[in-house]
Image (tube, rainbow, N blue to C red):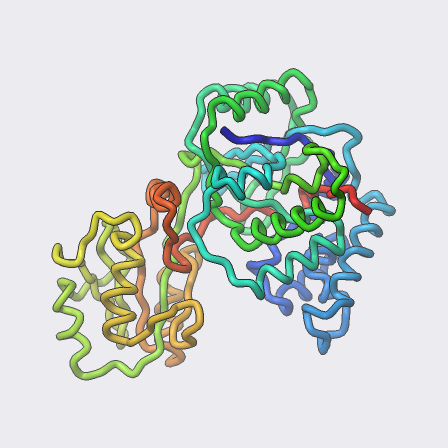
Length: 412
């Protein structure tokens, strides 16, 4: 069973919540972040991507960037744009997009639970991406953005969360990027906090990383380093935990994560495709069933339906993204490692089919593939099997905003 840990969140003063909260650091490049930051002095991007406050010629991984992040965090606190709660609390974070709501419990989760496999992963991480967040966490002495976790719904926990929302006013309530409404409640009754802690400890066997594998690894490594440096600390020391938002998997939606590929398209391309897929022309490339794919080539959409001979009951090999990788990208284009091969790129489903058409019609890309979304059950099954999904298998919407919660590690 898993531990949750109430904490004294650093968070926006109510009047600044909408101005401070922003898209996560890893969905914006430095140019996009700089533009948003120039328009908004309150934006959390001044902390999360502090290179926007330094010369453009400076590397985003320069020492000065992390020093600036730490000083900006302190400045936000001094100006009381950010405040810190004076007692450990839990929080509820509700996001509503296109009429669909999801509510997560904001808490800290245990590094020990992660190292012992109770917080399960489904992706590999890249060391160079971990280093950036490690340096950011160390400079700020804080988990500066949350990990997006999920679990199989527990009715007692759900009832407690629903009841709290019904009987208390939200601390924040605003609509922001992509017309998503964000609402936050503070759970400040000790008996309710204790009941939630006990229920997770008794009834929730595992948590799963939905999004944020690099942030998780970074937070864990910082926490382990701090624990080694503070050998006289107790298990309740803040660096033994990392900031998380935990949603029941039944409330989450994974969008398609589509692919574009650079040519050339060989003369035998269709004959090679038809060995493993039934190929027909269509007007709309969006797949409506598992094991089918949309393909856009030379101004025409096609539907590719996987033949029975390539289907698999294996939780990884049977994924739609695996079928496409193994029987199209690897076999036909010789793209073996999609993490490093520059001939392939990825387009989140939030951008729609028109984005795929525009990328191919521009001539920059030769062909686009639309993928049926991975399901939450797929994700949990892969994690339970101790296996790893192919890169870029999941695209979650809506995105958790950064800046609403910061976890102070309390070692400075």
